[in-house]
Image (cartoon, rainbow, N blue to C red):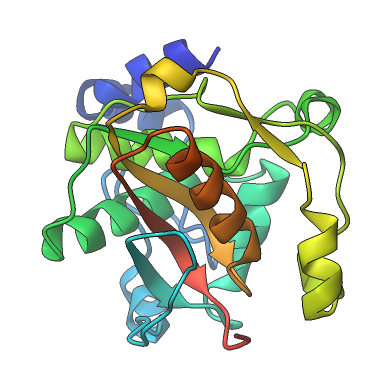
Length: 225
């Protein structure tokens, strides 16, 4: 499924106009109809606040985020997580790609924060993969879905204290393909960064298994550190 999705995204410019006739594209924030190649309607896009802070992620070589997470962007994130609006992944993934390109960030491959397999099957998709697929298509960087796996279910990081977050992530991830990781420059993608603990844990895992560099990238960064 993931390989087919990446293939379809690659040829979006050809497919989109046809799909738009059958299923008109909507702004992932307000729901208004928009052109098939637009990310947001002009009014909603004008309200989005670009992220401009500096974030240090332990074990990573850099961090990028497009938007500050607030009430203006949250509807798009909600739709993406719940699989309601097909344009949310396109809007957020393309925005993230544009941000990374503007910062001259490149890599050998893109990967993403994995979900626990049972949770992934229950939801039927991983929103971080959807973002990664869109970002990879724009940047012409392959997306790897076989680098790491989540080995157990964890509590929501945002509900925990700093110490609890670290304990919550102990042995929560494992490498799947060490040879594919070795000596590679990797972009690690997630939808929202709150504390950065998950990104730090996975960055550490990738580095421990031979990654040359890991650049973390998220669509949104909360105000919480």
